[in-house]
Image (spheres, helix red, strand yellow):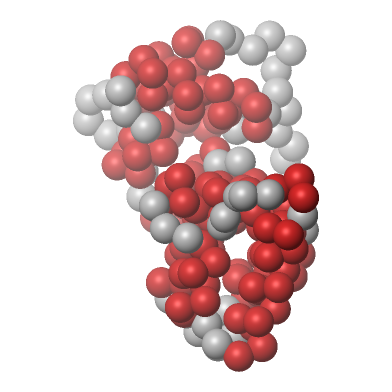
Length: 167
């Protein structure tokens, strides 16, 4: 197993965006270039790249990656590029579309995230998918799982620091 590290001299965000745009240009996609950029940046740098790419090219980087990549490689790159709350929202949205009684993704998110992390995932879900994560989970689940998820996510709502914020 190899270790990914952020290089000592990181190119500017604008350079990274330009290189990503070049990786998408022409016939085929330069997957090696995408990896050399996104795999060697920390979460804050990847977030900055996303914002700058959108501002510069008027296109969401995640949508560009979605168009250019496919299969497992696409999924890995997308999940790597998202911050933890966005990743949870993405995975929860996928999981609710393919609900099974033993849905491990929603179970993991519900049982391992704090109320604050669920709140952030709910906000990310609303921003990305324009719907409530809590309502989506409630619609696609039942019984004890629905009750446990609701209690855990409501812990964030009832926290005075989060007053007025709804998942």
